Image (cartoon, rainbow over all chains, first blue to last red; front, side, top):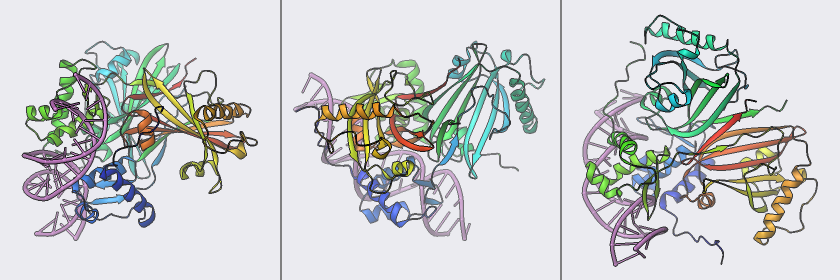
Length: 246
Length: 246
DNA sequence: AAGTGGTCTAGACCACCTT
DNA sequence: AGGTGGTCTAGACCACTTC
Protein backbone atom coordinates (compact mmCIF):
# COMPACT_ATOMS: atom_id res chain seq x y z
CA UNK A 1 0.00 0.00 0.00
CA UNK A 2 1.23 3.44 -0.91
CA UNK A 3 0.57 6.58 1.05
CA UNK A 4 -3.08 6.51 0.10
CA UNK A 5 -5.85 5.64 2.55
CA UNK A 6 -6.38 8.44 5.14
CA UNK A 7 -9.48 6.81 6.58
CA UNK A 8 -10.00 9.76 8.92
CA UNK A 9 -11.22 9.16 12.41
CA UNK A 10 -14.64 10.56 13.19
CA UNK A 11 -15.46 13.95 11.83
CA UNK A 12 -15.58 16.52 14.65
CA UNK A 13 -18.98 17.88 15.55
CA UNK A 14 -18.12 21.45 14.69
CA UNK A 15 -17.15 20.39 11.17
CA UNK A 16 -20.38 18.53 10.63
CA UNK A 17 -22.23 21.52 11.99
CA UNK A 18 -20.42 23.81 9.61
CA UNK A 19 -21.52 21.66 6.70
CA UNK A 20 -25.12 21.56 7.84
CA UNK A 21 -25.23 25.29 8.45
CA UNK A 22 -23.50 25.97 5.17
CA UNK A 23 -26.20 24.14 3.28
CA UNK A 24 -28.93 25.81 5.28
CA UNK A 25 -27.45 29.20 4.40
CA UNK A 26 -27.80 28.45 0.71
CA UNK A 27 -31.30 27.08 0.81
CA UNK A 28 -33.16 28.64 3.72
CA UNK A 29 -31.69 32.07 4.22
CA UNK A 30 -31.34 35.25 2.21
CA UNK A 31 -28.40 37.65 2.29
CA UNK A 32 -28.71 40.02 5.21
CA UNK A 33 -31.15 37.83 7.08
CA UNK A 34 -30.40 37.33 10.77
CA UNK A 35 -29.95 33.84 12.12
CA UNK A 36 -31.39 32.65 15.42
CA UNK A 37 -29.11 33.53 18.29
CA UNK A 38 -26.26 31.27 19.35
CA UNK A 39 -27.99 29.85 22.41
CA UNK A 40 -30.98 28.80 20.39
CA UNK A 41 -28.94 27.38 17.52
CA UNK A 42 -26.83 25.37 19.96
CA UNK A 43 -29.94 23.97 21.59
CA UNK A 44 -31.51 23.18 18.24
CA UNK A 45 -28.48 21.16 17.15
CA UNK A 46 -27.94 19.61 20.55
CA UNK A 47 -24.42 20.92 21.09
CA UNK A 48 -22.72 23.22 23.55
CA UNK A 49 -22.60 26.85 22.60
CA UNK A 50 -18.81 26.73 22.31
CA UNK A 51 -19.06 24.02 19.69
CA UNK A 52 -21.65 25.94 17.74
CA UNK A 53 -19.38 28.95 17.90
CA UNK A 54 -16.51 27.00 16.36
CA UNK A 55 -18.68 26.36 13.33
CA UNK A 56 -19.84 29.97 13.12
CA UNK A 57 -16.27 31.24 13.39
CA UNK A 58 -15.27 29.17 10.37
CA UNK A 59 -18.23 30.35 8.35
CA UNK A 60 -17.36 33.93 9.21
CA UNK A 61 -13.75 33.35 8.18
CA UNK A 62 -15.05 32.05 4.86
CA UNK A 63 -17.04 35.23 4.43
CA UNK A 64 -20.38 33.47 4.70
CA UNK A 65 -21.55 35.06 7.93
CA UNK A 66 -21.20 38.36 9.67
CA UNK A 67 -21.40 38.56 13.43
CA UNK A 68 -21.83 41.74 15.44
CA UNK A 69 -21.90 41.89 19.19
CA UNK A 70 -25.14 43.20 20.54
CA UNK A 71 -26.79 42.77 17.16
CA UNK A 72 -26.71 39.22 15.91
CA UNK A 73 -25.44 36.96 13.15
CA UNK A 74 -26.42 37.73 9.59
CA UNK A 75 -25.86 36.11 6.24
CA UNK A 76 -23.00 37.95 4.54
CA UNK A 77 -23.22 39.36 1.02
CA UNK A 78 -20.61 38.22 -1.51
CA UNK A 79 -17.17 39.57 -0.80
CA UNK A 80 -16.32 43.03 -2.03
CA UNK A 81 -13.96 42.81 -4.98
CA UNK A 82 -11.02 45.13 -4.55
CA UNK A 83 -8.46 45.83 -7.22
CA UNK A 84 -4.96 45.92 -5.78
CA UNK A 85 -3.08 45.87 -9.03
CA UNK A 86 -1.14 49.00 -9.85
CA UNK A 87 0.69 50.23 -12.88
CA UNK A 88 4.28 49.51 -12.03
CA UNK A 89 5.02 53.17 -12.62
CA UNK A 90 2.29 54.67 -10.50
CA UNK A 91 2.76 56.25 -7.11
CA UNK A 92 -0.10 56.17 -4.62
CA UNK A 93 -2.30 59.23 -4.58
CA UNK A 94 -2.61 59.39 -8.35
CA UNK A 95 -5.76 60.40 -10.24
CA UNK A 96 -7.67 57.10 -10.16
CA UNK A 97 -6.89 56.16 -6.62
CA UNK A 98 -9.69 55.06 -4.30
CA UNK A 99 -7.88 56.03 -1.15
CA UNK A 100 -8.65 58.90 1.15
CA UNK A 101 -5.92 60.52 3.21
CA UNK A 102 -6.98 60.55 6.85
CA UNK A 103 -3.89 61.70 8.66
CA UNK A 104 -0.14 61.81 8.93
CA UNK A 105 2.53 61.29 11.55
CA UNK A 106 6.25 61.69 11.84
CA UNK A 107 7.19 58.66 13.86
CA UNK A 108 9.36 55.63 14.35
CA UNK A 109 8.23 52.97 11.87
CA UNK A 110 7.60 49.33 12.83
CA UNK A 111 10.76 47.26 12.83
CA UNK A 112 9.72 45.29 9.75
CA UNK A 113 9.16 48.49 7.80
CA UNK A 114 12.45 49.98 8.94
CA UNK A 115 14.19 46.89 7.63
CA UNK A 116 12.55 47.20 4.24
CA UNK A 117 13.37 50.89 4.05
CA UNK A 118 16.88 50.34 5.26
CA UNK A 119 16.64 53.26 7.66
CA UNK A 120 18.83 53.60 10.70
CA UNK A 121 17.33 52.41 13.98
CA UNK A 122 15.67 55.39 15.57
CA UNK A 123 15.24 57.30 12.32
CA UNK A 124 11.84 58.92 12.02
CA UNK A 125 9.77 58.63 8.87
CA UNK A 126 6.76 60.42 7.48
CA UNK A 127 3.72 58.16 7.75
CA UNK A 128 0.58 58.91 5.76
CA UNK A 129 -2.66 57.33 6.92
CA UNK A 130 -5.17 56.38 4.28
CA UNK A 131 -8.60 54.77 4.22
CA UNK A 132 -10.43 52.87 1.53
CA UNK A 133 -14.15 52.13 1.51
CA UNK A 134 -16.26 50.10 -0.87
CA UNK A 135 -19.92 49.17 -1.09
CA UNK A 136 -20.47 51.54 1.80
CA UNK A 137 -18.35 49.42 4.10
CA UNK A 138 -14.82 49.94 5.36
CA UNK A 139 -12.43 47.87 3.29
CA UNK A 140 -8.88 48.76 4.19
CA UNK A 141 -6.57 51.11 6.00
CA UNK A 142 -3.01 51.84 5.01
CA UNK A 143 0.13 53.33 6.43
CA UNK A 144 2.52 54.69 3.85
CA UNK A 145 5.99 55.17 5.27
CA UNK A 146 8.43 57.56 3.61
CA UNK A 147 11.79 58.53 5.10
CA UNK A 148 12.31 62.28 4.98
CA UNK A 149 15.74 61.70 3.51
CA UNK A 150 14.08 60.21 0.43
CA UNK A 151 11.60 63.04 0.13
CA UNK A 152 14.18 65.65 -0.69
CA UNK A 153 13.93 67.70 2.45
CA UNK A 154 11.42 68.37 5.16
CA UNK A 155 7.82 68.63 4.14
CA UNK A 156 6.36 70.71 6.87
CA UNK A 157 7.44 72.76 9.79
CA UNK A 158 4.88 71.09 12.00
CA UNK A 159 6.61 68.62 14.30
CA UNK A 160 4.16 65.77 14.78
CA UNK A 161 0.43 65.22 15.04
CA UNK A 162 -1.13 68.66 14.84
CA UNK A 163 -4.77 69.36 14.16
CA UNK A 164 -6.50 66.62 12.15
CA UNK A 165 -7.29 68.81 9.16
CA UNK A 166 -3.71 70.01 8.96
CA UNK A 167 -2.37 66.48 9.11
CA UNK A 168 -4.57 65.47 6.21
CA UNK A 169 -3.26 68.37 4.17
CA UNK A 170 0.29 67.45 5.12
CA UNK A 171 -0.33 63.85 4.09
CA UNK A 172 -1.55 64.94 0.68
CA UNK A 173 1.53 67.08 0.35
CA UNK A 174 3.77 64.07 0.99
CA UNK A 175 2.00 62.10 -1.72
CA UNK A 176 2.31 64.96 -4.18
CA UNK A 177 5.99 65.21 -3.41
CA UNK A 178 6.48 61.56 -4.26
CA UNK A 179 5.07 62.03 -7.75
CA UNK A 180 8.19 63.93 -8.71
CA UNK A 181 10.39 60.88 -8.52
CA UNK A 182 10.65 58.33 -11.31
CA UNK A 183 9.45 54.99 -10.02
CA UNK A 184 11.68 52.07 -10.99
CA UNK A 185 9.45 49.33 -9.73
CA UNK A 186 6.93 48.13 -7.26
CA UNK A 187 7.07 44.88 -5.33
CA UNK A 188 4.04 43.58 -3.55
CA UNK A 189 3.23 40.80 -1.15
CA UNK A 190 0.08 39.48 0.44
CA UNK A 191 -0.14 37.57 3.68
CA UNK A 192 -2.58 36.75 6.43
CA UNK A 193 -2.47 38.77 9.60
CA UNK A 194 -4.65 39.93 12.43
CA UNK A 195 -5.89 43.43 13.04
CA UNK A 196 -4.19 45.63 15.60
CA UNK A 197 -6.42 47.44 18.05
CA UNK A 198 -6.20 50.62 16.00
CA UNK A 199 -6.83 48.98 12.64
CA UNK A 200 -9.67 46.92 14.04
CA UNK A 201 -11.40 50.06 15.21
CA UNK A 202 -11.11 51.75 11.85
CA UNK A 203 -12.25 48.62 10.03
CA UNK A 204 -15.23 48.14 12.30
CA UNK A 205 -14.04 44.82 13.66
CA UNK A 206 -12.71 43.46 16.91
CA UNK A 207 -8.97 43.43 17.54
CA UNK A 208 -7.41 40.27 16.18
CA UNK A 209 -9.84 40.00 13.29
CA UNK A 210 -8.30 38.30 10.24
CA UNK A 211 -6.89 40.67 7.66
CA UNK A 212 -4.99 40.48 4.42
CA UNK A 213 -1.84 42.52 4.69
CA UNK A 214 -0.57 43.93 1.40
CA UNK A 215 2.95 45.29 1.62
CA UNK A 216 4.18 47.51 -1.22
CA UNK A 217 7.79 48.48 -1.80
CA UNK A 218 8.28 51.49 -4.03
CA UNK A 219 11.68 51.43 -5.66
CA UNK A 220 13.47 54.58 -6.82
CA UNK A 221 16.98 54.49 -8.19
CA UNK A 222 17.46 50.96 -6.94
CA UNK A 223 16.50 51.85 -3.39
CA UNK A 224 13.25 51.38 -1.49
CA UNK A 225 11.90 54.91 -1.24
CA UNK A 226 8.60 54.14 0.42
CA UNK A 227 6.76 51.23 1.98
CA UNK A 228 3.01 50.91 2.14
CA UNK A 229 1.31 48.51 4.52
CA UNK A 230 -2.36 48.10 3.64
CA UNK A 231 -4.67 46.08 5.84
CA UNK A 232 -7.79 44.63 4.18
CA UNK A 233 -10.68 42.95 5.98
CA UNK A 234 -10.17 39.30 5.12
CA UNK A 235 -13.76 38.33 5.83
CA UNK A 236 -15.37 40.75 3.41
CA UNK A 237 -12.78 41.33 0.69
CA UNK A 238 -11.41 39.52 -2.31
CA UNK A 239 -8.30 41.10 -3.81
CA UNK A 240 -7.88 41.07 -7.57
CA UNK A 241 -4.67 41.52 -9.47
CA UNK A 242 -5.63 42.45 -12.97
CA UNK A 243 -2.81 41.40 -15.26
CA UNK A 244 -4.79 43.55 -17.68
CA UNK A 245 -5.55 41.81 -20.96
CA UNK A 246 -5.58 44.77 -23.30
CA UNK B 1 -18.04 65.44 20.16
CA UNK B 2 -17.26 63.79 16.86
CA UNK B 3 -16.85 60.12 16.28
CA UNK B 4 -13.52 60.04 18.07
CA UNK B 5 -13.08 58.60 21.56
CA UNK B 6 -13.29 54.75 21.62
CA UNK B 7 -11.94 54.50 25.15
CA UNK B 8 -12.03 50.69 24.95
CA UNK B 9 -13.26 48.69 27.85
CA UNK B 10 -10.78 46.31 29.47
CA UNK B 11 -8.47 44.39 27.22
CA UNK B 12 -9.48 40.70 27.13
CA UNK B 13 -7.14 38.27 28.82
CA UNK B 14 -6.35 36.34 25.68
CA UNK B 15 -5.17 39.53 23.99
CA UNK B 16 -2.90 40.44 26.87
CA UNK B 17 -1.61 36.90 26.84
CA UNK B 18 -0.91 37.13 23.14
CA UNK B 19 1.15 40.24 23.69
CA UNK B 20 3.11 38.71 26.52
CA UNK B 21 3.76 35.51 24.60
CA UNK B 22 4.67 37.46 21.50
CA UNK B 23 7.38 39.31 23.35
CA UNK B 24 8.61 36.13 24.99
CA UNK B 25 8.91 34.52 21.55
CA UNK B 26 11.25 37.26 20.41
CA UNK B 27 13.45 37.34 23.46
CA UNK B 28 13.45 33.92 25.06
CA UNK B 29 12.90 31.42 22.28
CA UNK B 30 14.68 30.38 19.11
CA UNK B 31 13.05 29.30 15.88
CA UNK B 32 12.08 25.66 16.06
CA UNK B 33 12.20 25.52 19.83
CA UNK B 34 9.25 23.81 21.49
CA UNK B 35 7.19 25.69 24.05
CA UNK B 36 5.94 24.18 27.30
CA UNK B 37 2.69 22.32 26.78
CA UNK B 38 -0.65 24.07 26.95
CA UNK B 39 -1.60 22.82 30.38
CA UNK B 40 1.61 24.09 31.87
CA UNK B 41 1.48 27.44 30.07
CA UNK B 42 -2.10 27.96 31.21
CA UNK B 43 -1.14 27.21 34.79
CA UNK B 44 1.90 29.46 34.60
CA UNK B 45 -0.20 32.42 33.44
CA UNK B 46 -3.09 31.62 35.73
CA UNK B 47 -5.72 31.20 33.03
CA UNK B 48 -7.92 28.40 31.79
CA UNK B 49 -6.51 26.30 29.02
CA UNK B 50 -9.19 27.54 26.62
CA UNK B 51 -8.08 31.11 27.14
CA UNK B 52 -4.45 30.22 26.59
CA UNK B 53 -5.48 28.43 23.41
CA UNK B 54 -7.17 31.57 22.09
CA UNK B 55 -3.86 33.37 22.31
CA UNK B 56 -1.95 30.50 20.71
CA UNK B 57 -4.46 30.31 17.87
CA UNK B 58 -3.89 33.94 17.04
CA UNK B 59 -0.14 33.57 17.13
CA UNK B 60 -0.40 30.59 14.81
CA UNK B 61 -2.62 32.57 12.45
CA UNK B 62 0.05 35.25 12.41
CA UNK B 63 2.62 32.65 11.45
CA UNK B 64 4.51 32.96 14.72
CA UNK B 65 3.80 29.48 16.05
CA UNK B 66 3.31 26.04 14.68
CA UNK B 67 1.20 23.51 16.56
CA UNK B 68 1.11 19.80 15.85
CA UNK B 69 -1.10 17.37 17.65
CA UNK B 70 0.83 14.73 19.51
CA UNK B 71 4.03 16.71 19.13
CA UNK B 72 3.83 20.17 20.63
CA UNK B 73 3.99 23.87 19.86
CA UNK B 74 7.11 25.25 18.23
CA UNK B 75 8.32 28.67 17.22
CA UNK B 76 7.69 29.04 13.50
CA UNK B 77 10.37 30.11 11.02
CA UNK B 78 9.68 33.19 8.87
CA UNK B 79 7.01 32.62 6.28
CA UNK B 80 8.02 31.00 3.02
CA UNK B 81 8.02 33.58 0.26
CA UNK B 82 6.13 32.34 -2.76
CA UNK B 83 6.05 34.12 -6.07
CA UNK B 84 2.57 34.04 -7.58
CA UNK B 85 3.15 36.57 -10.30
CA UNK B 86 2.99 35.24 -13.83
CA UNK B 87 3.79 36.67 -17.19
CA UNK B 88 0.38 37.62 -18.55
CA UNK B 89 1.13 35.41 -21.52
CA UNK B 90 2.24 32.29 -19.74
CA UNK B 91 0.24 29.12 -19.33
CA UNK B 92 0.82 26.91 -16.31
CA UNK B 93 3.23 24.06 -16.82
CA UNK B 94 5.82 26.19 -18.58
CA UNK B 95 9.57 25.81 -18.19
CA UNK B 96 10.10 27.76 -14.97
CA UNK B 97 7.13 26.43 -13.12
CA UNK B 98 7.52 25.12 -9.57
CA UNK B 99 4.48 22.91 -9.73
CA UNK B 100 4.38 19.16 -9.89
CA UNK B 101 1.47 17.38 -11.56
CA UNK B 102 0.03 14.83 -9.14
CA UNK B 103 -3.12 13.66 -10.86
CA UNK B 104 -6.05 14.35 -13.09
CA UNK B 105 -9.80 13.81 -13.12
CA UNK B 106 -12.66 14.28 -15.50
CA UNK B 107 -15.36 15.55 -13.23
CA UNK B 108 -18.07 18.05 -12.46
CA UNK B 109 -16.36 21.27 -11.34
CA UNK B 110 -17.39 23.24 -8.24
CA UNK B 111 -20.28 25.58 -8.88
CA UNK B 112 -18.11 28.67 -8.56
CA UNK B 113 -15.67 27.35 -11.16
CA UNK B 114 -18.47 26.38 -13.53
CA UNK B 115 -19.75 29.93 -13.34
CA UNK B 116 -16.34 31.37 -14.20
CA UNK B 117 -15.91 28.94 -17.07
CA UNK B 118 -19.42 29.50 -18.31
CA UNK B 119 -19.98 25.79 -18.75
CA UNK B 120 -23.40 24.24 -18.80
CA UNK B 121 -24.60 22.72 -15.53
CA UNK B 122 -23.58 19.10 -15.58
CA UNK B 123 -20.79 19.56 -18.09
CA UNK B 124 -17.64 17.67 -17.15
CA UNK B 125 -14.22 19.29 -17.25
CA UNK B 126 -10.66 18.05 -17.19
CA UNK B 127 -9.13 18.78 -13.80
CA UNK B 128 -5.38 18.64 -13.31
CA UNK B 129 -4.07 18.30 -9.76
CA UNK B 130 -0.80 19.98 -8.94
CA UNK B 131 1.39 20.35 -5.88
CA UNK B 132 3.92 22.94 -4.89
CA UNK B 133 6.51 22.58 -2.16
CA UNK B 134 9.04 25.02 -0.80
CA UNK B 135 11.69 24.93 1.93
CA UNK B 136 10.93 21.24 2.23
CA UNK B 137 7.38 21.92 3.35
CA UNK B 138 4.10 21.67 1.48
CA UNK B 139 3.07 25.08 0.27
CA UNK B 140 0.09 24.78 -2.00
CA UNK B 141 -2.15 22.49 -3.98
CA UNK B 142 -4.02 23.47 -7.10
CA UNK B 143 -6.86 22.28 -9.25
CA UNK B 144 -6.72 23.47 -12.84
CA UNK B 145 -10.07 23.13 -14.57
CA UNK B 146 -10.26 22.98 -18.37
CA UNK B 147 -13.44 22.20 -20.28
CA UNK B 148 -12.81 19.62 -22.97
CA UNK B 149 -14.62 21.81 -25.45
CA UNK B 150 -11.86 24.40 -25.01
CA UNK B 151 -9.10 21.84 -25.39
CA UNK B 152 -9.87 21.03 -28.97
CA UNK B 153 -11.13 17.51 -28.55
CA UNK B 154 -10.71 14.73 -26.06
CA UNK B 155 -7.32 14.24 -24.54
CA UNK B 156 -7.38 10.64 -23.58
CA UNK B 157 -9.43 7.57 -24.07
CA UNK B 158 -9.32 6.81 -20.39
CA UNK B 159 -12.64 7.68 -18.80
CA UNK B 160 -11.84 8.90 -15.30
CA UNK B 161 -9.37 8.19 -12.54
CA UNK B 162 -7.19 5.37 -13.80
CA UNK B 163 -3.88 4.35 -12.33
CA UNK B 164 -2.03 7.15 -10.57
CA UNK B 165 0.95 7.16 -12.92
CA UNK B 166 -1.31 7.33 -15.95
CA UNK B 167 -3.30 10.19 -14.51
CA UNK B 168 -0.12 12.18 -13.96
CA UNK B 169 0.89 11.61 -17.57
CA UNK B 170 -2.58 12.61 -18.71
CA UNK B 171 -2.41 15.76 -16.62
CA UNK B 172 0.88 16.77 -18.21
CA UNK B 173 -0.67 16.16 -21.60
CA UNK B 174 -3.51 18.55 -20.80
CA UNK B 175 -1.02 21.25 -19.83
CA UNK B 176 0.99 20.71 -23.01
CA UNK B 177 -2.16 20.98 -25.04
CA UNK B 178 -2.94 24.36 -23.49
CA UNK B 179 0.39 25.81 -24.64
CA UNK B 180 -0.89 25.78 -28.20
CA UNK B 181 -3.42 28.49 -27.57
CA UNK B 182 -2.56 32.17 -27.53
CA UNK B 183 -3.29 33.57 -24.11
CA UNK B 184 -5.10 36.91 -24.15
CA UNK B 185 -4.90 37.59 -20.48
CA UNK B 186 -4.84 36.33 -16.97
CA UNK B 187 -6.96 37.61 -14.11
CA UNK B 188 -6.11 36.69 -10.57
CA UNK B 189 -7.69 37.09 -7.19
CA UNK B 190 -6.64 36.30 -3.64
CA UNK B 191 -8.97 35.66 -0.75
CA UNK B 192 -9.05 33.96 2.61
CA UNK B 193 -10.57 30.52 2.85
CA UNK B 194 -10.38 27.36 4.89
CA UNK B 195 -8.94 24.06 3.78
CA UNK B 196 -11.23 21.26 2.67
CA UNK B 197 -10.61 17.84 4.12
CA UNK B 198 -8.71 16.79 1.03
CA UNK B 199 -6.58 19.92 0.76
CA UNK B 200 -5.85 19.88 4.46
CA UNK B 201 -4.48 16.37 4.15
CA UNK B 202 -2.20 17.27 1.29
CA UNK B 203 -1.01 20.43 3.03
CA UNK B 204 -0.31 18.64 6.27
CA UNK B 205 -2.87 20.58 8.25
CA UNK B 206 -6.21 19.92 9.88
CA UNK B 207 -9.40 20.50 7.91
CA UNK B 208 -10.53 24.08 8.23
CA UNK B 209 -7.00 25.46 8.46
CA UNK B 210 -6.72 28.99 7.05
CA UNK B 211 -5.58 29.16 3.45
CA UNK B 212 -5.06 31.80 0.80
CA UNK B 213 -7.07 30.90 -2.25
CA UNK B 214 -5.63 32.21 -5.51
CA UNK B 215 -8.05 31.96 -8.41
CA UNK B 216 -6.66 32.37 -11.94
CA UNK B 217 -8.76 32.91 -15.03
CA UNK B 218 -6.98 32.17 -18.29
CA UNK B 219 -8.55 34.10 -21.13
CA UNK B 220 -8.38 32.92 -24.75
CA UNK B 221 -10.19 34.73 -27.53
CA UNK B 222 -12.22 36.71 -25.04
CA UNK B 223 -13.44 33.62 -23.24
CA UNK B 224 -12.30 31.96 -20.02
CA UNK B 225 -10.53 28.83 -21.25
CA UNK B 226 -9.29 27.54 -17.93
CA UNK B 227 -9.63 28.28 -14.24
CA UNK B 228 -7.01 27.47 -11.65
CA UNK B 229 -7.80 27.35 -7.95
CA UNK B 230 -4.62 27.27 -5.89
CA UNK B 231 -4.76 26.83 -2.14
CA UNK B 232 -1.78 28.13 -0.14
CA UNK B 233 -1.14 27.56 3.55
CA UNK B 234 -1.93 30.93 5.06
CA UNK B 235 0.07 30.31 8.22
CA UNK B 236 3.38 29.59 6.53
CA UNK B 237 3.26 31.49 3.23
CA UNK B 238 3.63 35.03 2.03
CA UNK B 239 2.63 35.57 -1.58
CA UNK B 240 4.62 38.01 -3.67
CA UNK B 241 3.52 39.67 -6.86
CA UNK B 242 6.60 40.90 -8.59
CA UNK B 243 5.63 43.82 -10.77
CA UNK B 244 9.12 43.20 -12.09
CA UNK B 245 11.25 46.34 -12.17
CA UNK B 246 13.38 45.73 -15.24
C1' DA C 1 2.13 3.85 27.77
C1' DA C 2 2.79 8.53 28.11
C1' DG C 3 2.45 13.05 26.44
C1' DT C 4 0.75 16.38 23.17
C1' DG C 5 -2.73 19.26 20.99
C1' DG C 6 -7.90 18.90 19.44
C1' DT C 7 -12.73 18.55 20.82
C1' DC C 8 -16.60 19.16 23.86
C1' DT C 9 -19.44 20.39 27.80
C1' DA C 10 -22.34 23.36 31.01
C1' DG C 11 -22.24 26.66 33.08
C1' DA C 12 -21.08 32.11 34.30
C1' DC C 13 -20.29 36.88 33.51
C1' DC C 14 -19.16 40.91 30.48
C1' DA C 15 -19.44 44.45 26.62
C1' DC C 16 -22.21 46.22 23.34
C1' DC C 17 -26.41 47.56 20.80
C1' DT C 18 -31.27 48.38 20.55
C1' DT C 19 -35.49 49.87 22.51
C1' DA D 1 -33.89 46.64 30.44
C1' DG D 2 -33.34 43.01 27.58
C1' DG D 3 -31.03 40.59 24.02
C1' DT D 4 -26.87 39.65 21.37
C1' DG D 5 -22.25 38.00 20.67
C1' DG D 6 -17.50 37.90 23.31
C1' DT D 7 -14.86 36.09 27.18
C1' DC D 8 -13.69 32.78 30.66
C1' DT D 9 -13.69 28.73 33.60
C1' DA D 10 -12.75 23.82 35.15
C1' DG D 11 -13.28 20.10 34.06
C1' DA D 12 -13.50 15.55 30.61
C1' DC D 13 -12.40 12.70 26.82
C1' DC D 14 -10.36 11.83 22.09
C1' DA D 15 -6.78 11.50 18.23
C1' DC D 16 -2.29 11.52 17.27
C1' DT D 17 2.82 11.01 17.83
C1' DT D 18 6.63 9.28 20.11
C1' DC D 19 9.13 6.22 23.02
